[in-house]
Amino acid sequence: MNSQLLQQIVKKYESLYGSDHIEVRAPGRINLIGEHTDYNEGYVLPCAVSPAIYFAMGSREDGKVCLNSYDYDSYCEFSISQKEAPKEQWASYLYGITQIIQEKGHKIKGFNCVFGGDVPVGAGMSSSAALESGLCLGISELNGLNLDKMEMAKIGQRSEHEYVGVKCGIMDQFASIFGKQGKCVRLDCKTLEYEYSKLDMKDYIFVLTDTKVKHSLASSEYNTRRSECASGVEALKSKYPEINSLRNATVDQLKSVIGKITDTIYNRCKYVIEENERVIKACEALNNNDLETFGNLLYLSHNGLSKMYQVSCPELDWLVDQTKNMDYILGSRMMGGGFGGCTLSLIKADKLDEYKSVIAPAYKKQFNIECKFYAATAEEGTALVK
Ligand code: GLA
Image (cartoon, rainbow, N blue to C red; front, top):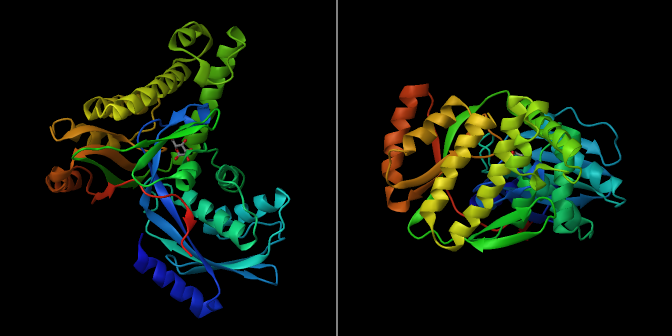
């Protein structure tokens, strides 16, 4: 919890709107394994993390929504009943949330909001999901809606689909809302059942290494992957009518439709089927305190993401490759949607400084970019602070 940042946000809120307000913290997330599986009705294994977005919010009686981005020193206002999205790109996620809640039949008042955070933007820690989850909880609290947690995750996801244009799965919003301190949570994206597991890491920790790149392909390729998987399912369905998603398919079934799909579609689908199996194995490994097996699964996941799903980039591949010679790192992979952002590596805690001191100059030499590091621990999900 970044109390100092929250205090600054509250101070700004009070200077603009007075003291009557609520405070919300909505965290970013990491995903241990299970990438690009959520929109294929598969499994994911995320945690909420300590970087978060903080909100100070209070109701207004005139139906206006007044949004202040503390980090960007930017302001946007619209009427709660306005049907046209505001011009400001950063406000589209938030506008979307206000619209979807109302479309669901809830009556809400206008409100004032100051928000800001320490979730690095573009690093693949889902600052946008944190923004959506936090605002959704804030609106629910201010209006006594008592929105259910899963419903809030779905509202955030819909806002992303309808107001941002990324056909994302449910993982990011789910993780930001359902995270628990010291635990990861396995979500079955088909049934939405979930199970928490204690993260018993012995003397290991997760470190994120931020490539500081975000290749422009990210959102268009994301939607392309989604439709490639859907074509794979169509081909499978014509032979196996019971298959509705890659979740129920096996690699053998996929092999039997080889003539009907392109090599690319075959590879995309094979990756997803195998990644789901890896999530199950990774959970078993964690429950058995077998971090070596867990680490190996991270490498296999990266290999699939890079070679078969093709959502990695040279910077991510390079970072993962470097760790293979480091005996204090048990596994590493790209994390999130891909085409930039962070790698996630399982590293011996007392070797973190050594790792940073080797990687930072080497990465700079290779790509002429300063990478960044974040140690990631599992923290509580979106909640009222006050
Ligand atoms: C992005 C999306 C998620 C998920 C990941 C890849 O973060 O928002 O829904 O699909 O990519 O696993």
